[in-house]
Length: 513
Image 1: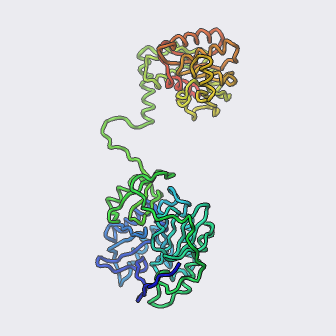
Image 2 (image 1 turned 90 degrees about the horizontal axis):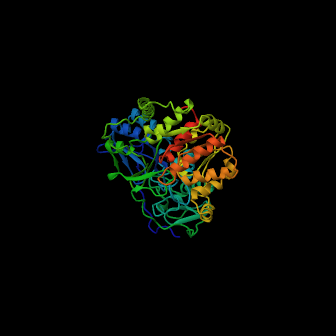
């Protein structure tokens, strides 16, 4: 590659503004605050906005190098007042006063969020730390720019003094100036390679006010080995579209900032709901990448929305209405909380009159669960309704419906999949707590397995629902279990279902409501 044929000749040092060197604009002092890779936080932006409100024009301005600016700041003899400097420094955006003007590091904005060949934010942070620790690099021009493209091509065509492009396999190709490409190196060796290029620039750059600001302004190329661009260097790509970022590990939205001006109203709107540490990325397109925040819709109805209060009041209402309906005197005393929770899960107070509970059901089921017995279910809806946090021994909750052996087995036997699935769990049924909340055929099938000699469970909660076979299966359960001495719970009639059954299991799992 060849250098530019007509390098720019400078007649003065650059005047790019910073806190230590504000620009005296017509409206007051202008300062630029460098962000490494555009990264900051919601708290830092709010703190900087407070400085803008108290001492500047009230707005935070975004630059095309993904930095921030404040305008209309008070100047005393061409310098910022000391209290303003302290206020800016308190935001954390001035980590090195000596190097503040040369911390110009652009990074693909979505790096580490979505896409790209590598997350370059750790590389950028390492580069910034190395710059700030190197006194010689403080002599770089405030316009000298490090550009790190993560392999997606969004920065590959930007003006660059020193930088890299990430390549597949954890590699990167170092570059300097518009035209020169260096070695392909592992990413963990990229920072020393970039620093070597920056030092090479300082070594060959003439001194004095006419010293070049950029690598492209040198009359001769840097004395470093130059190669062709690697075949994996991407073509230039367009900026990310506005809206939700596809494929982001954490939901992220790309939002425009009109004219690059964050007014107080816009800042409050965009950052509303974000905590102080929420990551924010300023992009070279004068836009922001923000964590997606779900916002509650405008309240329009008068209703109770306090979850714990709803919970407590619900159980109080159930007990009041049960008492008015005659109470639960037909049930064992220790089954009261089980039935109340079943009513809670269905919204049907009259359900209590149809519940049948064996006198040993509660004690047997709780003892089995405390001992680690599994819960065998006929439907994934029942299994999903079991609150795992209530289980006393991290008990297994099993449903075999999705086992690939179920469909052919059900077809061969001429029965339903729910029924056939129980046979695949035959070796776990003994001593378990069985919960049938969907298919009457599964409850009939269970009783047939037991009649054929299967080891009995510790307890059965049988509440299948439906118009065909539901009432009959529950009558068969009551008759068989009474004779076999198996504790059980069921509900007369067609009523039943997954919610009712899971509610009973949750009550049996723990006595507390």
